[in-house]
Length: 336
Length: 117
Ligand SMILES: Nc1ncnc2c1ncn2[C@@H]1O[C@H](COP(=O)(O)OP(=O)(O)OP(=O)(O)O)[C@@H](O)[C@H]1O
Ligand SMILES: [Mg+2]
Image (tube, rainbow over all chains, first blue to last red; front, side, top):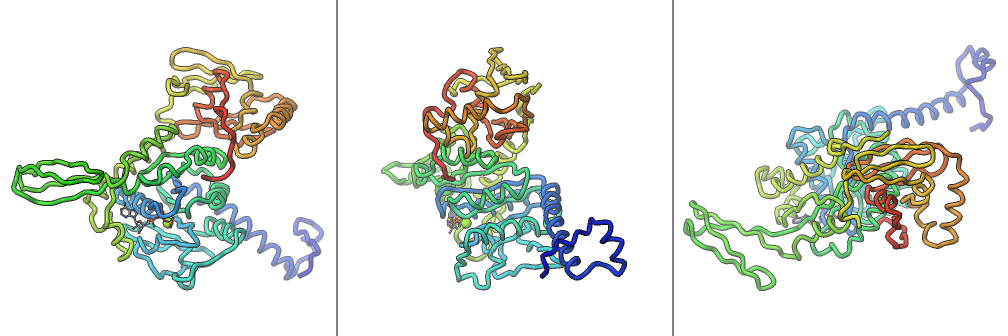
């Protein structure tokens, strides 16, 4: 390709080229057009998506993807238009949780179209790019980050109330790239588990949030307690030996049903972390073996048991997130 | 110190400083230079870790032309200040502004550590 800069703004060239642009011209124009389109589509995308929430954690395996899909489904349950962007290239597991395993990217006229998972939630995952889900892809940083930018610009989300963005654990590159590419992110939720609380260096996470200009919406404690259910004689006292030598007591209802929530790990760590660093505590999600099954068979807990304890817990977390997103409502600060 | 922080109800921008009013009617004046020197972003924060770079950050800020910043609310707990010249990246939590108002170290004496978590 010639690198002579043929300027299409030059009136002489423009009037001379009565037979239309040269192939080089054409190519340059196409490139410029594609770039302009990408930039415009980023702004467009941002306008069409009312709220954008990032889901992050310091440590892997704490349930980010479970929480991200759960938030998305819970919002969709409220009738909202929701999308999930799964940024995790090394271990994208959102498609599995959304019943979309094995899907490929659907591209039409240069635009990427999201797959539709449970409850109509739109899903874009790096997994759709991978040939074989069992092969972990080792993409080098710049390519990885380039792919993220392209994914953000080229996806045809349509109008969304919420876009939930699921990240790989612990690194700062991906959130930074997303924050730079997608304007007006409402904030990040930080997922932790009771036993990981000590590891979550919240001071650093808050500093990080400040440095990428994305506020912390709050902390979610996942795998918080385990609920045992059973039946016995109506109205009878039930005693259960809990961890750490404790005994939990409850009374069965008139139908003989009882349920007790046991704190398998230290209790209230997420809340303490939130208090210590003065960020909102968004709530606790129970340990629910159904999440693991759901992850395996592709039916998320919220879909299989929409009225279940986990769905209820998610709904509470969602409303806490929404409270944080209602910017300005609470603050009557007058700026002159 | 930030436990009993009152709610900020008014922020008035003056030529070289701004006046903060809290719900208990207490008033504080913070200079723009002090504010900018305390920028919490990842680029400015490490410069406050040692005295020399902190002083040179200060000098650089004082060289900037005087201007009134644009201010935006960030969620419910912070403010962003936009300047024509110099760094506009930091998100200032209300706690940080409260510490600045009270002439206390906004970093709480802790050095800045770079990295996500
Ligand atoms: N509340 C829960 N109760 C029971 N199991 C859970 C819960 N949350 C997550 N899990 C299980 O824990 C495992 C890890 O969850 P998940 O994949 O959501 O974590 P992650 O933080 O996204 O991991 P990674 O860091 O690898 O991206 C999965 O098997 C998931 O089913
Ligand atoms: Mg994950």
